[in-house]
Amino acid sequence: IATGLELGGKDPAYVRADCDLKYTVETLVDGSFFNSGQCCCAIERIYVHADVYDQFVQDFVKETKNYRLGNPLEPETTLGPMVKAKAADFVRGQIAEAVSQGAKAHIDASLFPADKPGTPYMAPQVLTEVTHEMRVMTEESFGPVIGIMKVSSDEEAIQLMNDSDFGLSASIWTKDADAALEIGDQIETGTWFMNRCDYLDPALAWVGVKDSGRGCTLSKFGYDQVTRLKSFHLKLVTA
Image (cartoon, rainbow, N blue to C red; front, side):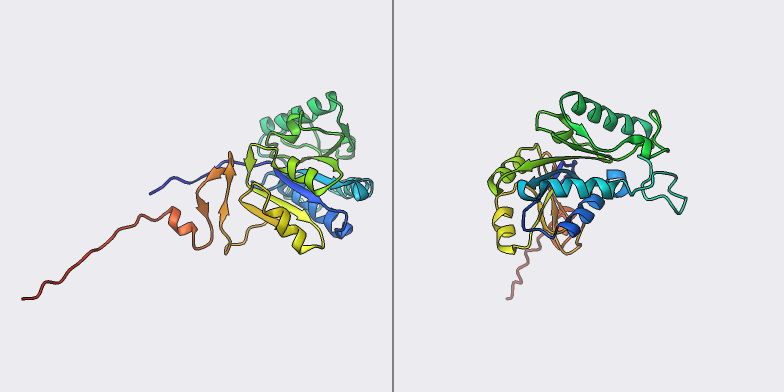
């Protein structure tokens, strides 16, 4: 039986100027911070067209500040801890390094009293003025941090989305389905979403390219990954 590997991702989103901005912001905030960003197909980097960039960032930061970090057993909590303190420290390190390289952090951790260095509890963070020279835009974070970059065209967004060692999933936010299909054909990922992210459909094959893995799960094709073929070749001989 063949070996299948799912090895992680750095999943991008591209926000076009013609998107439904309110829906896009709300869904991408959730896609970035659901389960504190600890999902294999979480959004980890966002590219926003210049025409809507300023409003997108403003609304995204505002929506992020609505989270309540705390014990997941408490009903008011909407953002829980990371899996362990070491994982949180890793993400804090990415953020600190990016800020030292010129990134702008938009979330004041004091808004989240449960945030404590050395523990799994960390505030979400939204970074702008980021580049692909920063680890936070190229290295899997698997935590509650997102980098947002301004782009001027579809072509620039495609180049940046593909500038990654990973290729699990990517998403586009637009009202133009034809453009979504055309751009999706040029994106090097196993799954391409339009106006959706961080979501699995059991009927669709779940695959990764580049360093995101090999093989397939879900859909009818997923059975091939856990099946060994055997042929029966019989001939009846009659007198």
